[in-house]
Image (cartoon, rainbow, N blue to C red):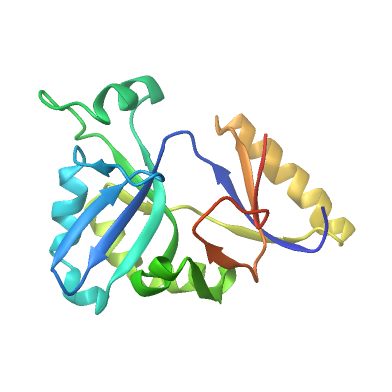
Length: 184
């Protein structure tokens, strides 16, 4: 494990792909294996108000979280009496829908992360959509290696599962990849 890495907290929620379809003027959320998530309407309705600001179709990759993982799992696929209003969408990536359908992006992780921040005001104003904070470390540097260990310790103390290490130059892949590694 060396070289430059983008590092972020590993979240404990439900992976959620939010498709903002500019042409059909819709926002739909899916699980990683393609099942529609219908119980986070406060998120999809909110994002639908900003389709024009996105200017084209995108997939927002993130994790839905709630007050507790158990509470979230009770609401994810519930058909009635849904109580998911406290759910928060934590975003960590964005890819144009056309590239997502092709299975791979043209931009590297660092550029996609920077691009996602272009929509930060929209997300922050919602109160329930956030961008997962990222830091970059050069793990070939002794100073950065020490800072990374301190960061990892801090993340664990804050209750996260661990961290995600991402290759800053890696293209988004619509499958599991060694470009994103989980460290617990």
